[in-house]
Image (tube, rainbow, N blue to C red):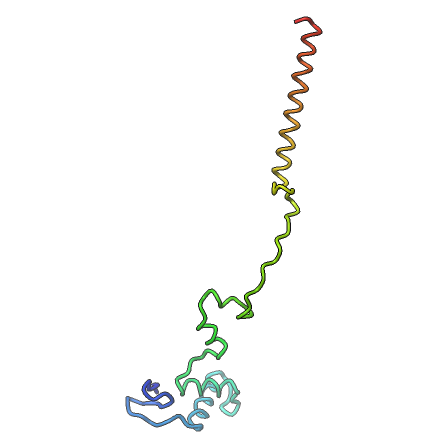
Length: 136
């Protein structure tokens, strides 16, 4: 069986039309789907009927929500609440940064450099005082 694109809902077999889809045709296809799924033909589920109806009427396997999502631009598909522009939250300061935006590592390095400069100045002054005492 093939779907006739000219007459949606009509089925053709070897290009000769067999008419519009009937409830009996849907029931028969639903029984086939149940059998394919490993259930006896009398244990047809609602999902079997829906799939049979979609197949025979030339509809897609996607439900309406999925079809709507597929029609959206790629950038909008992630949005769980379409239509909501959202709001920008206030940017909180990083706990590892000071008021000037320097990271904790940068603060430690700069502190170490200041300490090293201070130590060098103290050491140079002590060396000068030692030379003066010795009379050099």
